[in-house]
Length: 159
Length: 453
Image (cartoon, rainbow over all chains, first blue to last red; front, side, top):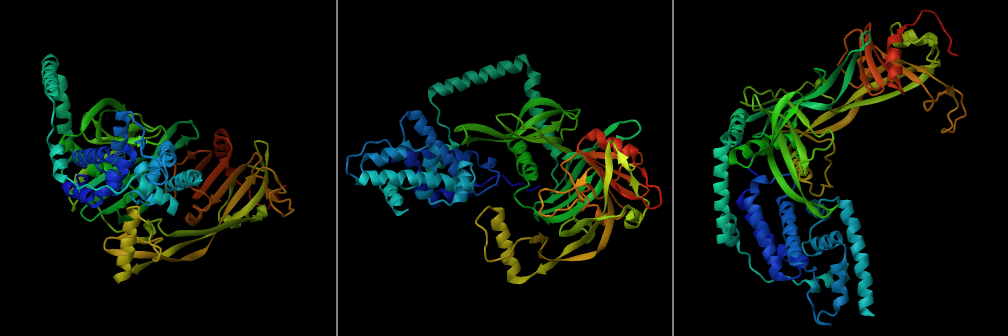
C-alpha cells in the first residue's frame, strides 16, 4: 500500500532555504527585533520537521510553514510581554520618527500581520488568506484599512 | 503604495543572516532537556509503570486497539469506501403512517497511483449518478482516509480519545491528525482534529468527523457503510455510459395554462387529482408543463492544448491564480483523456401536467395586469404529474430513479413523491400534514371535459 506521508524533510528544507530571509523579516516585524525573529523562524522549522507527517496537502507547503512562523513569532511576543515594534529608535534615525513606528505597533493584529505578509514576504492575497485563515476578500479589505491608517500617520509625521 | 513600502522598509530592513538548516535538523531530532525535565520524565515513567500494575488492562487495550485497526485497514492499493450521505428523505406508509428513513450513498473506488476516482451515487439503493474522474484536493473525506488514517496508525501518532455509540454501533474515536491553528475571531489557538470512529467489533472505520477543541459541529459526522483496501483487479473503474452520468445535462422548461379538458391528452394518461376543491383550496388552474432535455457534447482535446488545460486544472486545484488565457470551464480529465464541454443538443419536447390548488389572480410583482397568475404566496397545493422520465427534473423531482413502493410516498421537506399506475407524481404544500393528506386523497380524474373555476 503506497501512502503519502505529509511532506518530506527535503521539501521543508527547500522552503527554508528559498525564503529564509523573508521568514526572518516577517518574524522580526512581529517580534520587534531580529534575534527574536530568527529564533521564531528556527522554532517554526523545528516544529515543521517534527510534524511534517501531519501536513494534509490542502494548500501549498509554504502556507503551512507561514502559519507556523506567524504563530511562533506571536508566541515569543506573548512570552516576553513586550509590544511589537516598540524598540526605541532615535528621533530622525529613519526620517519618520516614532509616530509611524508606534502606529504600526498599534494597528489591530490582523492588519499588522496582513501588512507584514504583503510587504515583507511579498505574498499574494491567496497566500495571505491561507496563512491567516481568512478569505482573500478580507485580506484586501484589511490591507486597505492598514494603508489608510498608515498614510494618515505619514502625512502627520511630515508636517 | 510606494510611501507605505518605503516606510515599512525603513522600519524593518532586510535581515543579514545566513540560514542554519543543520541546527534545525539537530533540534528537531535531538531533544535537549534540562536535568529537571529528566527528573520529571523519570517520575512520569515510574508513575505510568505503577498505573500499568494497578490497571494493566487499560494500557494494553489502547495499544491493541490501534494494532487491530491497522490490521483491519488492509494494504491494498485501491481504497474502496461507501459513504452514507447526510441527505435523504422519509418513506411514509399511507395506510399505517409508518416512517422509514431513506439515505443517499456515495460509493467510491480511489486509485492513488492513477489519481483516479470512480464514484457511484445512489438514493435508496437506486443509482442516480455515475462518474469517473481525476481526484481534486477538495475531497476531504478521501484525503483523511487515505493520507491520514493508515499512516497515523503506522507511525504511532494516532490516539484513541473516547468510546461512543454511532448509529447503534459501539466505536472507538481515534484522532488521526491534529493541529493547533489560530482563529482570527478570537486570536487564540484551537485544536482542529480529524477523528475516525472504528467499530469495537471489526476495528474498521464506520464514521469520521472534524472537530474543533473536540467539539463536533451539528451534522458533522460522516458515516461509512464500507471501508476496505483492495487490489486494482478487484476494483471497479468501469467508464460510465453517457446516459449513466448527470454530467453535461441541460434542461429547457416552462409551463402554460390549459383547459382542464386537455389534461389527459397532455399527460398521455388518466390524470390524478384532489377533486375540484381540497382542504378549502379550489382547483385554480391546470398547466401544461413542458421541457426539452439536452446534453452538452464532450470534445476530446489532444496535444499541447490538452497539456495546457491539465496544467491550468492543476493550478486551480492548488488554489493558485487562474489561467486566464485558456478556457477550462467544464474541462474534465478522465484517465489520460482531456475533454471540454461543447454546446448542448436538445431532444424532443416532453409534456406533463400541473394542477394548482389555490388562488389565481393578478400578480402584483409583474407589470402585466392579468388575472390568471397562480398566487404562490397564498395557501396552495401543487400537484405535478408526468409519465416521462425526462420531465422529472424540470418538475423538481429529488430522485430520478428511486420509486417508493405502492401505497407509500417519499417525503422530503414539504413535498411528497409517489408513483400511481406508471405516473410519477409530486405534491407540494406549505405543511407536511397537508401533503400527506393530499397523497391519501389523490384519485383518478373522472373522464369528460371539466371547467376550472
